[in-house]
Picture 1 (cartoon, rainbow, N blue to C red):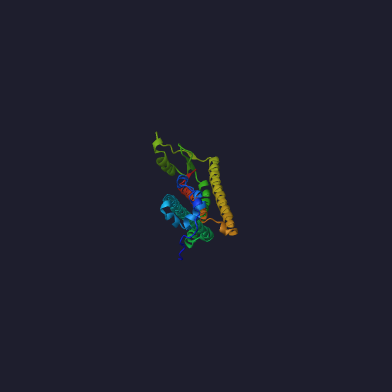
Picture 2: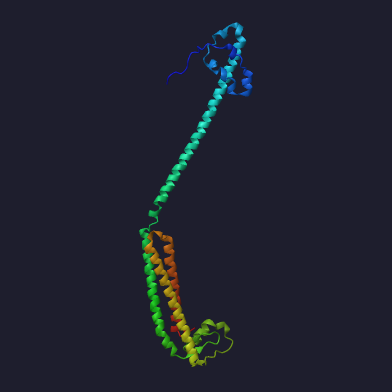
Length: 276
């Protein structure tokens, strides 16, 4: 580092130098007060003021030098603090920039991350297979129910005294009353109502056929919705939300399984001789 200090050798203008009041500079604290004589304070040869006759003038110049030094030290500290604050702000902005770049990188990689994982594909395949099993079982039960309907129609029916259900024999009726209406029995059970009226048989058949038609409509609606969903997936694979696809599959599974349980209950009731 080169030495920037110089030996004062400037010819001073003592009249101008001594015109500046140290008290004024001290009171105002404004560097503009000493600005006109600043160059002389730094570079003027003050040796002539060492004469005993100029002690008062030398003291005045010394005060100006002391106050100037205090001002410059204070200014240096102020600028150092400002520089430190600006450095901190710059580092904070750099950190925010890095964080924004990382977020941008994550967003750019997001389409790749949205692709179904092998495990997710495996789960979807398992759900489809389970749905297919339920559909096949549903179909089998409907065929079994169709076979039972003619057999039920040819049998004599007995009506429950406590509800609207009808049964193919007194034995089934007695079991039903014991199971469902045990608390309602206040008198000996009357099992002599053998219903030979064709109207009752027709009403029973109509209810069974209505139930079957309702199940068929529900199955057709499920198949139609599945077909539309598969078509949307085929047209725009990247628009499929894996979570939504999984929810749809399991919702279909629950719906089909509920229909399966309803059909199974109907078959069990029909097999036991109980008709709604």
